[in-house]
Image (tube, rainbow, N blue to C red; front, side):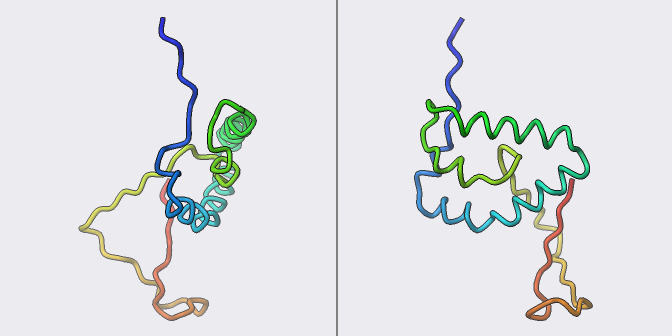
Length: 107
């Protein structure tokens, strides 16, 4: 039986650009985690437990990435359907500047 390799941070995170991106999406990651804790608390707890285990595993390189990863999700996938038009909320009085694209989460 082959040994199970230790999980590692994706190689892309050796790039400063990727680390900057991770910091930029921190708020979105936090929002998605809050949604998950409300709609599926057991799945949230499992993700939180897995992240804490990884953060306390010294054999994993790049602990700095894990310390910046503030989502209980283990990855992010972006799916784009070029046929879908961008949604603009032109009726909101809280939109600054006007016609700013609004973000919607689909679960």
